Image 1: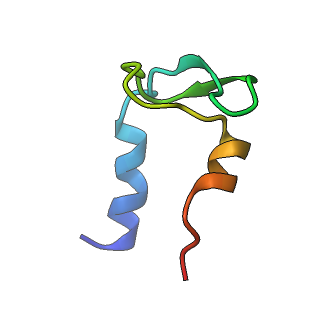
Image 2 (image 1 turned 45 degrees about the horizontal axis):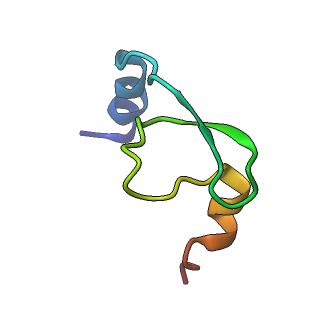
Length: 56
């Protein structure tokens, strides 16, 4: 599969269902592309970026 095929494949997928959450850190409302099950905290984009491990 070449790079052109990969680019087109993303258009074949339906839009992802978004779910509204309240950030476990700052309390802001946000949307995530998965349905949280309540077993783990869920963060908004800003708080998630602060918490995730840095890649080298």
